[in-house]
Image 1 (cartoon, rainbow, N blue to C red):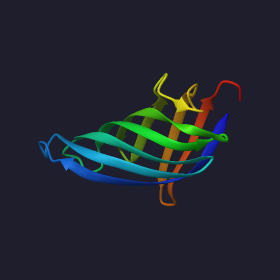
Image 2: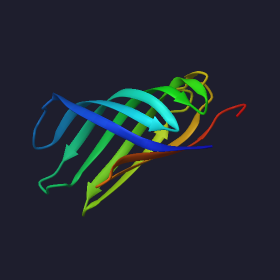
Image 3: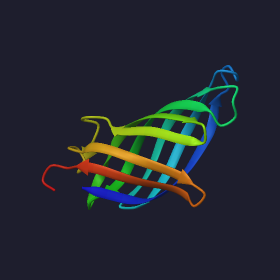
Image 4: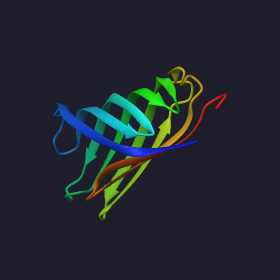
Length: 128
């Protein structure tokens, strides 16, 4: 199955840490489209001396409605930014779903460009 749409994101610094190395941020998102949901999570960034180059990992709990089902699930992010490009991997944590999304498996693809933030999800749900 597939879901596509837009999302808005807010990141709030939680710990400055070592400003030359890493930062910890609180994360919240609002999803629209095939996934109608909100999320909360944490992001750990790894900085470099080159503007626009960094890495990040994040854990995010998403709660809402997907494919006509209500529930929540957790995703794990791994991303790299550099040379004007962003690559990321966002996977649904196995067995993290609850409610009507208890059986969810899959991955999410994020895109950020001049038009805003978009996502697409490829996922499986038992009985769907």
